[in-house]
Amino acid sequence: MDALERASAGDAAWFSALDDDALERAMTRRDDDGRTSFHRACAAGARGRDVTRLARERMKGEAMARVVTTADDGGWTPLHTSAALGERETCGTLLARGADCEARTPGGQTPGHYAASKGRVGTLETLVSGGRGWLTMEDDVGATPLHRAAARGELRAIDFLVDALANGTTEVPKMALEARDKRGQTPLLVACEAGQDEAAIRLAKHGANVGAKDGEKRGVEELAPKLVSALAQIEAER
Image 1: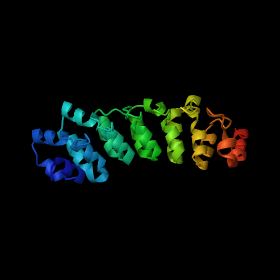
Image 2: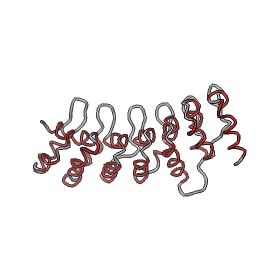
Image 3: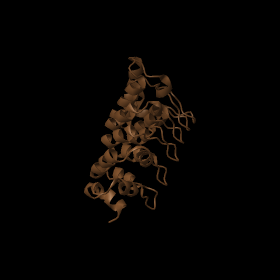
Image 4: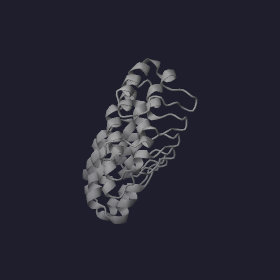
């Protein structure tokens, strides 16, 4: 097995036996997809945690910064991979070592977009500790992390993102709840179209505009007619 395979297998004992120079060479080796051994350890999830811890403890300065921030050929950084997997501890390590929580894939997605779409609430909390700018960042189709959570019906992620956007205040900025993707859809409309009824209701309770229309003039009546009464009642009770 080479360094890449050992990283994927989580073979921390093999890496720990290397001297510092050899460890750096092993961790920075790249596969055919442009992933370093360090990135592959991150992609291994729980199995690779001991390898990523070892790198954190042994690799210093520029060498560590390089493996933390290097994207693979698909534009994914180790932080994107760890966020998508819900590896909160690894995400914390990466942020502490210089990872950028606003890094984008070629499609414009930040690590937060992936964590939100998969409902990784603990990971979202960790990402917020590294900065808040990504909370309202749009990908190439205009979707924010809140759009992504709404599309997947991830209620806990929706609640967390709304609270994070409020940032200690009692009101969520309307620009966040009413952000429009490139089809003109708000997170609530995205939830309606995706059939995520509970997500649409949750967003309405958080203050989303239930009368919004998208770029094709479609609203709740067209996208989720069965929710019209429930959402109208929520709006009336505000």
